[in-house]
Length: 265
Length: 300
Image (spheres, rainbow over the protein chains, first blue to last red):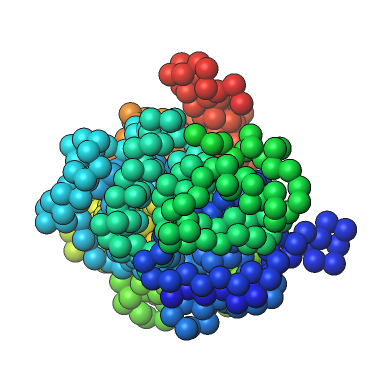
């Protein structure tokens, strides 16, 4: 479905600050895949997402979606079929606007014109979708989102993205900025939606046990490369210890410094 | 005198609504206004003098202003220039354009010519007391513009414009090109400013290239007064009403300043200083208001 062919990203090319953020990455994402991605800070995980989403244009290589070359499509065009959730829970919604207004904008992708699609019928539809979050938000549709907690806003962003039915969703540590309880709720919702709607998804996490527990495929990144790619039965057999050992084997350097970053629980 | 204050406040109120859109809804500080206001005036006067129907002339003024705004948005979008600079560029270029439109003159009168205002006055004379005709007319026009805007901001497009001013990433994530939205928003804003300029020219009886000087400051001051007057709300209907009310208040202060300023040896040229000081006072008052609400959050 989505394919990266020999993609490289170099920042500040030709200067002393030159930085190879991605080097020669080739990756095929199949329909229905749920890929978890781990790696220490600076490994290139977020750069990979930014490249897939179109925020960065690759220095070399190309990106294909259903065999169509989209390497030079701007971010807003790709956003029609790629849904994305950021670490910052405020980035997915407009705080100054009410919940129902936010849902009106997000329930369908693409340019908006002079129609008014917020009416009693769509309100009813939004309400029935909001019930799935089990946060009681369906009774607060006229409230401004600044009144909501980070966890509620992130859960809402997730729901609004899911009902627009994107072909691929990118989750960039979307629970990292939430408190443990909310993080767990949002993660559970994520897993539930991905299963229910059979979404193709990629999720960056700093939590190795989450990376093992969720999804059918796991990528480990280091220094701008994908160094380890497992799926299916082989992935199910993984443990945190095995992952750390694997990293050590592959890179001949110790993972100890990263253990603090890649929490095990 | 009271009707004079209101009429001025309502005419400029349309401009204030435009400034409210760019500064508050889109979060796009747009200085094109200083050029698009006299642009509207110039287009209106020249169209009237050429014998065009007044309402068509008004439409021409709106389109002219909208195009000026679109130019600012295009410069900002495609050359990646900061929005302030893009506005200043268009404003500067419009000065020359406006003189061209006025036929290489800085000032063109329409005093002895039929305008929308003279037509309205003729029609309703005898029905309403003469001095109140224009007041009623502008009350209707300003409220109609306000209501149309309220409707617009409740459509999907209008809501998305509001969301962009709040969170641009969200709009991009919805597959909407923010550049298109900015062009529409800034265009609409300047279209309204030009309409305001067109009415001002008919009211004053002339179009002048200097009409727009400092108009952005007046607009911003009006928006701020409006926000200060009314309790906090995010309902678009309340916000646009505040902008209009702010405009009436601001122009009342200016009107009184012009009429009674001589008592304290003030000249009309002092008004710009007064405007600036007024904005500074408003900024201070807003800070105080915020501080009272939440003493721990203003520390920045």
